[in-house]
Image 1: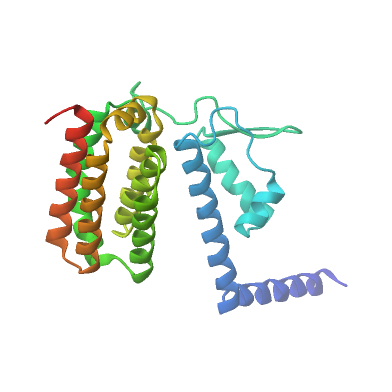
Image 2: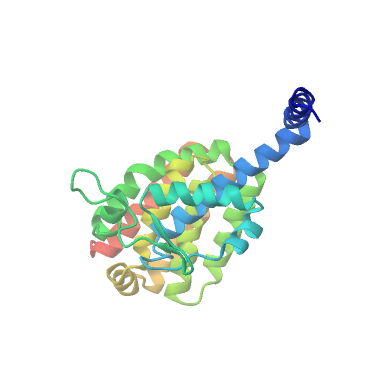
Length: 258
């Protein structure tokens, strides 16, 4: 094949590939790859942020992540390049990929927001919750889908069946998380994930163990039902007022107030 014919053939192949990429199928593949890479990025960042993957933790093998997120290996490696550039992971040839020793970068010498939240006192956490939850529960009342409400009711049911403080605390956290998730604000969801991590700290668990009397537990459950009933009725004002009342009760119990 002479050079002119060679380059003509290459040009034709390139044109076909461009046309394929611009078809609905091609665009669907790009969309799927973008969705998978974004999901992987969020997955890794969340596991590092909430402490599930501590410093030095070895990430799953590439083949497992490729299969889990339905992406190509080159897409996976681009995500890992980005994470490494952010200082979240380190890669070692022949050994694997690990969470970096200082996974969350700091700015101007200050601790990261996540570290500050996890280091906050229960009183500070409750103040933050009182500021944000009533506002976003109003959004949840108007934005919750049928699936959101099903998840909220499921968490409510599980919290009412809980037989131990730890089980109740787990489902209590899941219930609040499901309610705020129904507001469909990703930034809020990420922030509340960090706040929810405080529940795993010994100081928080100790306060809950001491404060969660049978009488107070009964009031919490009644307040949860009032919140969920308001959400199901799409009554934003009642939902906001109910969750505020509940959070004030929780703060009072944990802080030893009458």
